[in-house]
Length: 604
Image 1 (cartoon, rainbow, N blue to C red):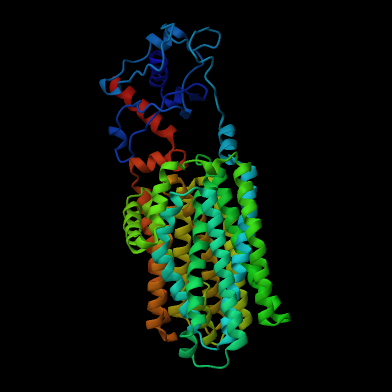
Image 2: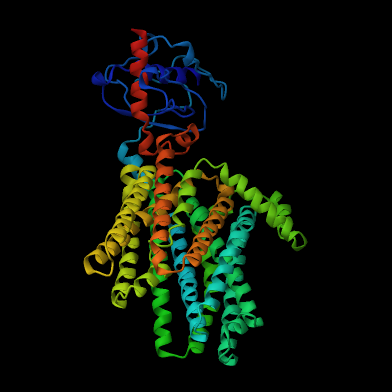
């Protein structure tokens, strides 16, 4: 093994300058790993090539080695002497009967365990990166995600519409939404920690049961109110027992739904697509985002169509029937996902974690466990290598003004804009989000996930800046400034959704599998806090004339996210290079060539 390592090192260091290199080969040495120096060092002071950190398997691609006229004796005797800093550790994995030098030419016979050095072409490497590890399991995951998300989105549209029919004030809907965000902020860390210490399939089944049960309770409360509540004041409605039960059930339902989303988007899809297959993972993330957008559109359209033909109580009963039918279907699909992936979802769970699960589920320590989970989740969250990418996602949640939503709709209606234009704007934003899912996967394939993330944030910040300038310099009541204003916001959704896909993949790559749900839950919790803060600002500055202030806050948050991500990208750490070693932003080949040239210059 020592002679194999020395021979490989000699072949690398004996390579001539780039202009005289022979044909290119992809050198694969089992048991050998190459770590390039940090890019923070200037090119003229780059240290010589180091060989360290033996791992079970590593591929060294795009290494220029002259093998056109190489013989055994030349490989062993005619290479430049190694510097002291190039010490090569020798690891004896087993007794080797023959300690003779390892010949490089194909015809030579040897008695080691390596019959040949396998070579992977660039096309083969790309094919591997784009091929999911468990394609059948991935398709089953898509089916489960589509069916569960469709029912969830239908209910997310049904309950506010039913409350709006029940009472003309917006306060009941606002109260339910506020406590929903609050429950996510408080409960997401403990649920994420519980999911990291509990077997995946049982946890998936339990969360589906909780979500369906709370949806049925909420629907029952609304049906009861529609049959028994007459015209009453807002304060009388929000203090009724049925409304309190609706708020509690809605908070638990949203928490369970977000936990399921985090598990499937941050944990399951990574195992099924493959952690070291960035193109396949990017494509899988794009498909999940497309399914989410489709379900959001179809769910609202279906329930709206039902409301136009049937009584609201009848529509809610139909929704309850779909919820009841969804539970066994989702349970079966969860089992199929695990079976089609050769039980990959059973991995990284040990029986020794059962005591941790029992402690987390102890009702007597619910407050203590909650505070401990939040403290532990925060400590783990801030220590992650990919923290700037996650914080950028949180910053994007501060943008509540220059985005399709309630505040933008209210602004346009107060400005006297036609409802048809408002509807066309919302539809265009949805289309841009769908297009972004196709762009993001292609962008990752071309430039890598890091540069793709930076591009998405820069595009969004630039277009929102244009929208802000148009708002301050021109009246959006006029047709041309209005169209430019709305078009800039709609096009900014390309950058927003692109980074949404890419940012998810960065977290998937950088967060250990054992902490995926905890970190994902913590990010959702902090994002909910960001939304609560901005909604509070909107409540304070509730006059339409103060919209410019909210728009400045939105643009500043997006620009801050772009600046933070680009700073992180431009000043990489060793851990960042280690995590994204296959990303085109950290090409190994230029570094190796620079090191060899620097080594040759020192010898001269």
